[in-house]
Image (cartoon, rainbow, N blue to C red; front, side, top):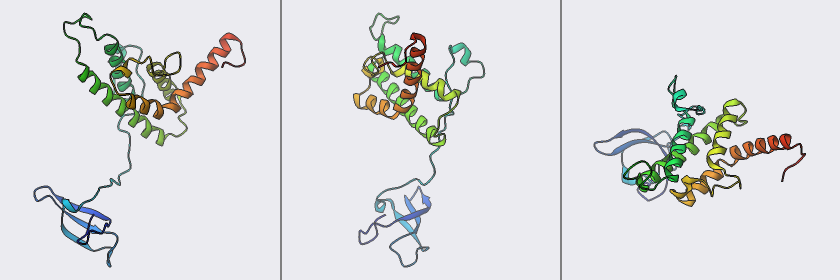
Length: 205
C-alpha cells in the first residue's frame, strides 16, 4: 500500500466494502503504532496483494483407469481426470482434418485453450501435491508417472512428437516438461531398468 507520501508500507486487510471499493486495514510497518487501523483505504492506493493462505491442491492424487467404462464405477475427479482430458486433446490434435468423422473439425482455438488450461492446471496440482508429499512414494505416484510419461514423452525422449505440442505454444510445452521433469525422469529410470532386465544387460545408454 502507498501512504500519502508515496511510501510503500505493509498492511493487513480487515474488511472490504465492494460498494464503495474501499478497505479497512491494519498497518504493520512504517507507523508509530503497528496495531493502528486506518479506515477507508481506496483501492487506488493498493500497490499489490499477497494471499497469505497456504496453497493446497484441490484435486486428489489419482490415476485414470484403463477404460472410461471403469471410470463410471465410483468415479471421482482427480489428477487422472486432467490426464484423460489431455489424452483426448492428443487424439483431436492428431485428427484435425475435416474428413475425420465429422463435417467440421474442432476449431484449433478451442482445442488450444482447452489443452493449455488442462496443462497449466495439471502442473499446478502436481506441484502442490509434490510439496505435501516430497518423497512421492507409493503406487499412485508410480502409476501417475507412468501415465505422464506415456502422455508426454516419445521414443527420443522429447515432446517433439506430442500432438498437443502442435496446438499450444513452445513456451507452454517447455514449462510443462521442465516442471514435470522429476516425474518423467523417475519413470524413465523404471523403463530403462525394465529394458536392462529384459535384454540381460547391465547398462543402457
